[in-house]
Each structure stands twice: as C-alpha cells, then as structure tokens.
Amino acid sequence: MKRTIGVMSTLLGTSVIARLPLAMLAIAVLLHAKHVTGSYAAAGLVAGAYAVASGIGGPLLGRLVDRRGQLLVLLPSVLLTAGLLGATAALRVGAPLGLVIVLAAGIGLATPPLGACVRALVPGLTRDPEATRVAYAVDATAVELTWVSGPPLALLVGAVWSTGGALVVAGAVMLLGTVAFAVQPASRAWRPAPRVERGGSLRAPGMRTLVGVLVAVGVLFGSVEVAVPAANESLSGLLMGLWGLGSLIGGIAATRRGGGAHSPAGLALVLAFLGIAHLGLVAATGSTAALAAVLFLAGMGIAPTFASVYAMVDRVAPAGTVTEAFAWLATAIAVGTATGAAASGALVEHTGPAASFVLAGGAGAVALLVCVVRARSLEDRPVLANLRTLARAAA
Image (cartoon, rainbow, N blue to C red):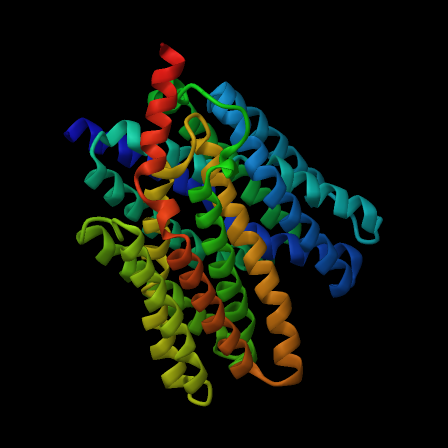
C-alpha cells in the first residue's frame, strides 16, 4: 500500500508540473500574439487557433497512446511542442499573422495528453474502486493549483522578461515535467486493454453522455470567466482566485469523503449544486462582497464534478480506449468554454454581466438534464458488455 501511494505521488507530482504550462499558455499565447501582431483582434484569432487545435489534438494523441503506449507518444509530442513554443517565442514584431496562427495551431495539436495519461494509469495502480475515486479526486484538486498559479506566472514572466520568455519558460517546464513522468516505470510499463471492437471511445453511449455533460459545464466556465471581469474589472483577479480556491476546498472535501459521486444519481446531485450555486451569482452581481462569497461557494462544486466524471470513464469507455476517452473530456471542456465565452461576451456587451451569470446557471441545468436523461448509459452494464466481448474474443 505504501509503495502504491509513493508511485501515485510521484506520478501525480510530475504530471502536475508538466500540466502547469497548460494553464500558462492560454494567456501567454494571446499576449505574445498581441506583441508580435500589434492587434488584439489578430491575437484572438491566434488564441482561437491554439484552442481549436488543442481540442482536436488531444483525442488523436490519446488514441495513439492507447495503441502504442505512453512513452512512445509523450516524448515525441513534448519535444515537438517545446520546439514550436521556442519558434513562436523567437518571432519578431511584424511577423506574418498566418505564420503565427500555424505555429499556435501546431502547439495545440502536439501538446502531450498528460492529464489523460495519468488518469489512465490510476485503475491499474489502485486495484480498488474506492481508492480509484479518491485518486481522481486528488488529481482534480491538484490540477486546480495549476489554474490558480499558471496565469499569474505567465503574466509575471512576461512582465519581468518578455512575452516570448513566458512561452520559453512554459516549454521548458512542460518538457522537463513530461520527461520525468514518461520515464516512471508505471508509465513505461502501461499497456492498454486489448481492443475488441473497432472505433473510438465515443461509440460508447456513456462516453457520449459524459462529453455532453462536460460541454455544458465548459459553457458555465466560459460564461463566468467573461462575466466576472465585466462585473468588477479591478478585482477580477482576486475574485477568480476565490473561485479557484473554492474548487480546491471542494476537491479536498471530495477526497476525504471517498472521491466524489459514486453513481449517476450522485453525479446529478453534484451538477445540481454546481448549477444552482452559479445561478446565485445573478443576485450577487451588484455587490463585490456578495460576488466573492458566492464565487467561493460555487467553486466548491468544480473539482468534485471532475472527480465524479473521471471515476466513471473506466466504467463506460470501451476496452482499449481509456486514454482517448479522457482526452475527449478535455476537448469537451475546451469546446464548451470557448462557446460560453463567446456567448457571454455578446451578453455582457448588450445586457450586462448578470445575463452571463444566467447563462452559466442555465448551462449547469443543461448538464444536469443530460445526466438525468441519459443516466442509464452511466450504469455498470457497459463494463459487463466489455467483459462479455472479451470472453467471446478469447473463445
């Protein structure tokens, strides 16, 4: 047991370091693109290209991991990503916009799927459903630290050194962290379960349910990320930090209580809290103190939501597709966040931040509805189907 905890701690620690740059890159790419092109509109196109490419590249690399193992995918992808970050950092003011977009898209496509890889390792290391849920909750909680510290770190390096320097630092940290993770014996030895059917993870109804849930949750995130600065620009950093701190506290609580929801009904309760708490931001819009309090409370539902969803992946994903499945969840969040941010921006422009908070609460309601309507797809029967298929293949 102590050895397992030690292995898990090492894997989680190295993977969190390697994932810190992901929290830096969204703002770092935007700011460097603005520096190079001199235009926020152009920088927005570059940031959008990076985000879209990340959503495409994650599942593709995840599927490759499920076929070739982690080491053979993680090392080439991180070397390519670090090289592209270096090339982007070296761009001079006035560089062609097309070149900046191509490099940003390349970074997004090549970024190694570290989160998916570490979560794919968990069931094989813990061998116990309860311990697995706790491990996912610990991971979801630890990742919140990267989102709290990553953007300020990118801004600090950009101010002290340069916007290109922030990209160089992100690339170096990602390279070192990914290599440290990939050379661990558990990562090197990991092999996926044999595929017994053709196709990807999304052929499973339960995976489509989880992706639908997280797209809606992503819309909630994107709405809040735009609405909070619109409600109080001068204190937006502090307010968003309280939101992240709430998630951190919620993740710790979920870890202590067994790792989040254990069933579709439990996930529905977590999503109900997430949606209702964020809808409460509507009433708090006019008061900074109230907004801070409600953001902290609402944030407490974030990490438990992720922990609960992650714990269901191994149950519903087809055999041999677990890394790709986790990568699809990251894509779902990215798509939802981009959609929510775009819609929220239009709402803020025309009606104010309260309308964006209504959108956030509505997105939480949609996530809950998807979970409730498709609850049967999240039950244990897909696992039994995988076992029966494996048995037929063996026979």
